[in-house]
Image (cartoon, rainbow, N blue to C red; front, side, top):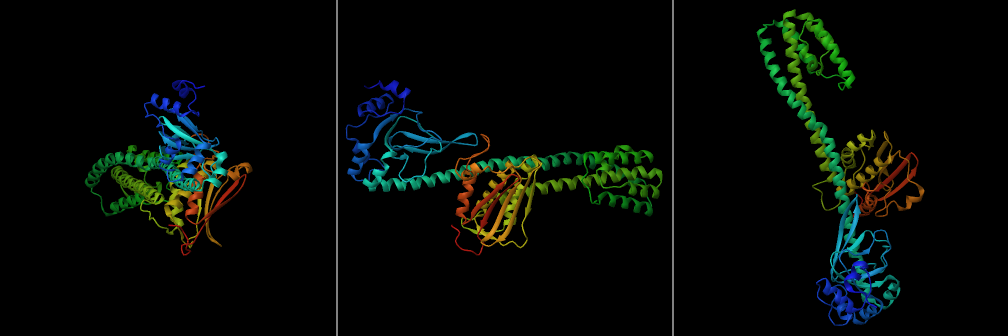
Amino acid sequence: MCIPPSSRVRRDPSYACCRAEVASELRFYGVPALADSDLVDRLAGHRTLGSAPRHELEWLVARGTLRLYGPGALLAEAGRPVTELYVLLSGHLAIYVERGGARNKVMDWRGGDITGALPYSRMGAAPGNSMTQEPTEVFAVSRDHFPDLIRECHEVTSILVHLMVDRARVFNAADLQMEKMASLGRMSARLAHELNNPVSAIERNAALLDERLNEAERSARALGAAGLDETQDAAVEALRQCCLGTVANSVLSPLEQAQREDRILDWLTDHGVDDAVAVPLAETHVTIDALDRLAASVDDGSLDVIVRWAAAGCSVHTLASDIRHAAMRISGLVSAVKGFTHMDQAMVAEPVDLRSSIGNTVTVFTAKAREKSAAISVTIPADLPKVRGFVGELNQIWSNLIDNALDAIPESGRVEVKAVRGARGVVVSVVDNGSGIPPEIRQRLFEPFFTTKPVGKGTGIGLDIVSRLLTHNDADIEFDSVPGHTEFRVTLPLADQPGVAS
């Protein structure tokens, strides 16, 4: 007994029914009605299946069902078994995959396409939610018929196998692109955080520089009017050299810097010098001994002028030096990111210097390590031979492994990256002192969409991507894990070894 079309689609959008009902439903959604020709004729005109012999199409029709799905119907649910082959006769179907807490559309199918379960496919569970975008006609065949399909319908089977290979290639490309975009997003956030310090330093020092330049001009005029003799000039130059010099431990803690300012302030007060220069003078490398030598060489009237001139002049040089170092830090970060992403990457395998490849990747993760008070050490021999591969892909491998290691370690943890010459090439190890990988999940680590990270943090395809990229680079990976020591080892071919895919 047939249920009225409009209510049936809305309540249960997945059903088998007679052709008359499908025609009624299509009219309800404004889609042209089904032709009166046999369903075999529909399959014979199908873009993908149309080249198959008619007797094989008749075999399919005898074992399948024709369905109409309303908009928003769920044909396959993420993580649930895929039990049917879907031949789309009309309409639009899309698959959405959850990546990093967001829904991403991976692929579309329209009338003339085939999706769902395919013969010889290893896909057991749906990678995402397959939903109709509009009224969609589907001819469905249960995978229970696949053994007989393979035996009885050779041409249809051949078509479906080729389709499976193409679908796997598209999914792999989509996974890789999504992971690259996710990595780019994470890297951009880390880079923005890392750039904030030098940019703030430049902004802060540039504002101070204008003020100190004005003070330097005023003190220079006062110094010129003081009429110093040669002995006093020599004392002034000695103080200037002391201010501009470097000391072994020039980076002081806030407490140490405050104590230094207090000592200089006390000296200025004791010698009747304007104490307003205490802070700028403390920012230079001047010492109390240098100030004492100056005081012994000049009279009291000239001491105040000389100290103010030295404080202003040396402060200008210090600020300019800080701005230069901050700019160099920004340049270094940009260079590291360019090396990490390898914007000028060749499309063929080439010799790769792992010192540069790994070093650029570690630089990108400096901010994340600092957030956990973690240490990242890199040990690579200077004479390590080059490997052969795709440098951008290798950087992606190091990125995923180091990122996972940083996620695994506790606060103040440690990550070590080592590279040594091995029997079969170069072995790169990424070691962390986290809690280890539980034995029950080790066999699933490289499965796509498997993750132990919280929702929104892990995509579940990082190690799957690593596995694919290693295959493309003729490399392999293995790991050992116990509490407090997890080590992933990647073995890469040497640059003079042939065989890397192009």
